[in-house]
Every structure is written in structure tokens, then in C-alpha cells.
Image (cartoon, rainbow, N blue to C red; front, side):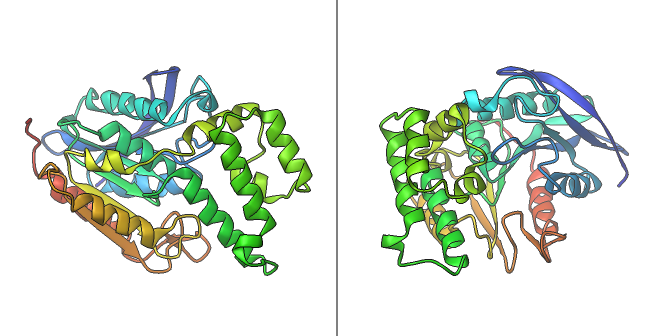
Length: 316
């Protein structure tokens, strides 16, 4: 199916959000829609090279697609570092409202698709809502940001070839000290001192970017966010996509936690769980150094979305 792309602008929690809207050329009727939510850091509407390919594949499949610059990135106003994950979820909801109001889009069939940190925002935005028909995440941990970061660092330490036992790894000791500092509200001056005393290892910037007071405050605010209450409160089908070779996310533990949460009694019967795991896929479910999608993805996501988009959403 052919489609066209255009600029989009709408009001978010911190002012103006800007992005790209892809609209399929309709033969008849209104089309379903997907809001793409980018990952951590200063992610823009393209989330590196990930979203353009995904946006095109979804639009070709007949979905209207809206992706946007995170607040304070690209053409969006504000500062993501001054906010919280809840603020990012509110921006995702604002993007959904904009897509729902777009002529030619069926407002009853517009859901979220969040990548990595954007998955946490998607789950928060969908929590407890009857008007969200589905939620999709890719590379989104079911553990806290603190646990995810430690897992990622453990892999970096191991892959460096110079790692000692985890209990005596200087990198992990420093990481644990920084997490503890965040929990007791330490200021950025103490953080700089801890990093300097450890020899200012390059992994700090590699893991979090060049830290400053604003970034530190954001990381400390989000580090113990637990995504599982949001998962338990979903009232819609949920697709969780992972690359099996993702070095950033504890995939096996995330799948275990999601399955346990979805197996709990009293959950909304609409809140089904589908897990798609792609061998050799990295954090963006890509292979060959990120040059192409893992075989079968995103076709599996499109197929899943089409099945749900065929079911018009009712209330209750």
C-alpha cells in the first residue's frame, strides 16, 4: 500500500511536540494507527535508524503512524531530563490523541508501540485504559532501570576480557554505589566525586551519556521504576518483542516476569500476552550489525497488529 509522510505538531506536557506522520492512501474507510515512542536519551522521531524502516513497514501494511521528537529534542520544546517516565507517558498519550483526531484515522483502533525506555512509557500510558486497543513494546525490560543498567554493564565488563568475578568488579562496585547514591538523593557533586575516585571510567558515559546535574536527576528519578504494575493493569492485548541476543536487556528474566504477571488472578480478560523472541536479534531486533531486521520481524508484529486492528474496540 502506498503512503505519504508529513510533518506533525501537537501540544504535549512541556509545550510543543513535533514529529512525522505517515498516512496510507485509503481505498475506503478509516485506517488504524500506531504511535511510535522512542527509547532512552535524546531520541528523536527516527530513534536512530530504527523507526524509519518500521514506520514504512507499518504504513505499507495500512496503519497510520506517528513518531515524534522527545521533549527538548529536534523540533520539540521542553527538556526530557527535567521530567519523569510519567511525563514521557503523558507525551505519548498526547501523540495518540493527535493521531486519533487525524482525518482518515479510526480513533478506536490507535495503539502504542514503544521501544526500550519507550516501552515503559507505553505501558504507563496504556495502564487502566479501555480506549487503548493494544500495546506493543520492543526491547523493553520487565525489570527496573537500575536492574537493566547493571545487566548491561555486566555484559560490557564480561566482553572487555578483563573482568574479574562480579563481586569484585570495580565497575559494578561503582555502579552499585551510584544507584545507592540516587536512592538517598545525593547531589551531582557527590556523583562526580564517586566517579573521579574510581578513575572516571569510560563506561559511565557509555552507559548513560555524558552525565551532568540534569541527567543525573532524571536517572535517579527513574531508576527504581517497576514496569510490572503497569503490565498487570493493562486492559488490552500486549505484544512484547525481544531480540534473543540483546546485550542490554535480561531477556529471559523479562519473559519470565511478564508471564508470571499475566498469570495472576483477577486480571482483565482482554489483557492477553504474546511474546515474540527472535534468535540473533539485538536490542532493536536487528542482525548483521544492525543492518537489517531479524528474519520474521517486523512481519510478525504487523500480523499481530492486523489481527487486533480487525477487532473494533468497545468500551467496558
